[in-house]
Image (cartoon, rainbow, N blue to C red; front, side, top):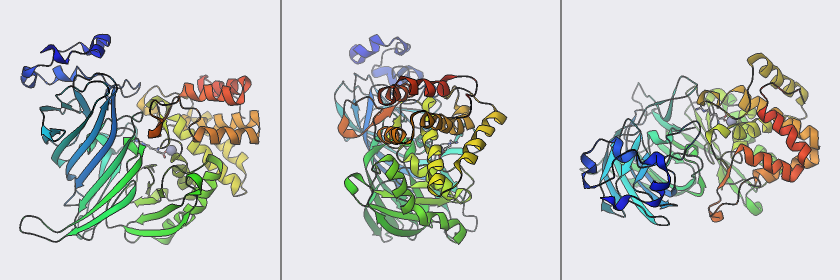
Length: 492
Ligand code: ARG
Ligand code: ZN
């Protein structure tokens, strides 16, 4: 029974709270094996992820036979690597009951702890080894309240009350909603590549992050209805929360490609609109190529091979899903489009070490709004004044978030953007431009053990160190004051 007690267990005391995993483990309370997996240790989300687990790739098959409802079935194979001895595998999952678990294709014992939101695969994975873990499930997507807004994170259902094929589903996962529909190591510091295959009714569109690589239409047969199946390959690792999935009666609009990828590689542009989207809503998306070109001029090559927006009807925030921003009808402006497009660098390419560092994403994306206004010849003093006034009115805090409720507040957005503006004022436009581009291209990240995987994980300390390294001590002091002081520093 002691075979699973590994070195890492012994050196990580918090793990030693349950009995050793043994053949009897399946009949002991769920808490026992769960206690043997140590989470990543996120400051704001202490239970998410598994320390020492590196999800390399997810091969996701989702089938939705009634778009607009929460019913789905899934078949997910995760290629997992252990960076330390793992006594078992613990994935985050709030979705329906798992009926099958396979380890390299062979059945493996597992336990689903619905309360903890963990799917435990009861086999050890020694340091340096890989396994393919397959999980199959069918039922209803998990429900998870947003930390701030009155909506449910993760899998979204847009009903079709008239039953005329108007139902839709999509993912809105930031920060931890991906686990409502797929089992994942749900932390931004563990990005992975994805292959997503979506099976939907004929005539329904299905789209995900990545390049479309296959489309299959199967006619009805005695045991299955007709189906439309589409596969997308996301070849650059992305955080789980940025995975885009959209299913529904969407109209695709192609636009001329722009040569903003690495080495000037072309980026294919395609937007998706719900039926009857008015022209006023469509208008900002016609500027996508121009926005992408402008931002890549500031930030360097665009990190993905495709870009576009999927417009959704519910009143939600917009979300920077990878290569395909999720844009509510009510957020369809060039300002919000610029913001989400900037996140493709800040958040989707430069990744968060911890959710408390989310201001790193939001500050740069908000600052891109100022850069765009400046580019349009507009008065940016009015914008920075408005940001400052918002903070004076609402109050502010140091930039590192102390609670989930602080993650998307005006401090993260406006104070974060003003911090960058103060830095620009301190060092001048030329140095600021070099700084911004270097950061967007991963210059602040600690060199990864596996640089070929393109993971660029950054925390607040890394940004400060990068500032000191590239702009000097005085610049770092200016930024540090904006990062750390309880009071609002003087307007830059
Ligand atoms: N990152 C999004 C944006 O500013 C905001 C997401 C808000 N997320 C949430 N769960 N409330 O572009
Ligand atoms: Zn944002």
